[in-house]
Length: 603
Image (cartoon, helix red, strand yellow):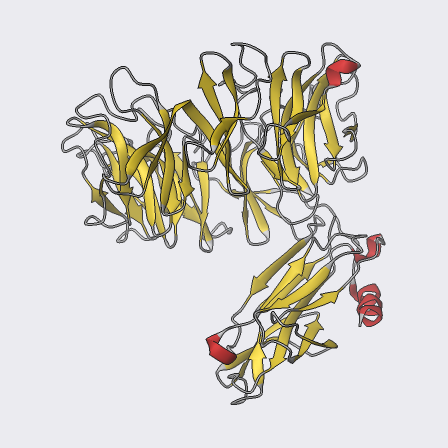
């Protein structure tokens, strides 16, 4: 089967060509900017806010086409006022199933909780939490189960924890944790990661009285189920899942701000180390030391400023003994710094600033010492800006990011796969602008990436689109609907590892099949939707097949090692699995079918 697949690939694959970006929509025609922002994917669309002189900032949506880019609703009908104009908080758009939650000001109720299904008629006020024009200013929406938790302020209670299921009747105050107007969450910083889904509720930062600090708390959504977890874990931020718990940054007077771990209990909440010994903090609130851990190989990777090394790369497995410095460039260059770290596939990308290279992109697999990818802006100039947007659009090492090839061209959209040859600036969108096009908010929508950028002044700051099909993105995604077997169980077909060039361990796995049953995996080079009674054949032809037997757990895994030849780059194939099952719906007892799997071979 593998030989057949390779031969067909040689006959059909084409070398990928890097595509250029294009303007998706000039929402505010002419040189003025609509300043799109808060790009949020929900279903088959991306929602965002944008401004026109007539409406101000309102809610928009796009399906990735120019014709499909439209305003959802003019929530504040006052000309030019804008329902999502920033006053106290940066607007948040939060996808919750098929419902978009956000705050808006319709000119009557102040900034309050709204919902939208993507239509004007379906865009409605959920609840006027603080009656009158002041508004409750809701923020930090966090889903847990079938509910969304958030912070909101009312004159009687101050800023406290609230919960909603997206309906008026299902929206209520969780608890007046600090009784009265001061508010139990009064000092929470928006977007600081001070709230995270945990079990049946959330971990959050709260305080119970005037003399108390913000500390780690838990809530199940009820007043009785809202309690302090650890009274010594002050100002928890950056709550990020790791194993059975979370890492976060916590302040204590003795150690300053340092990395901690919590499993949601008092006994399971503890510091991972005093990296900057004494009351000095290794983490903080500035852009370089804010705690933004990245997950790779079962460990969290983060930048911290330790006593010995300064800004360096650390990792942790969630235990003090498993927390250590991984890369400290100060050993060879006292003025060097690790400034940011991001993950794509099985690689970590770092911005490392040095006296000889400036700030440039480095890469590591978490085992080898990070190495320079390319000196993109030769000499001491900055090639990779610290806080440029970053997106790993698939499952491989490819990343779309913002780079600065020269100080004249400045910040422009780029891609990298961790190699010099695979690192390119995609386009110079602002040839006459010293600041560059300053692209931000890369957001995937199907086979497109949307982002916000500015040109040389002809259209201002607007929404752009990039077709990623030719970028060489390694991707494996499910599609279609399977067909049930014994017990109503529908088997599933998934990829094991990234379908990356040269990945000899890539495989396709069938799960949830009838145990110890004959199974087949089929592949072809085009998808389909052919009705077979109550079931559907999801590939066009049964071009390639591999027969096996499910194990005692109903699993049948097919190794599919991928060669490293560039001719395979961009190859796409589609698969579906069949399990012989007398209780299956296929042809009244022949078997069950998996959903489909589309695989694109990439970097």
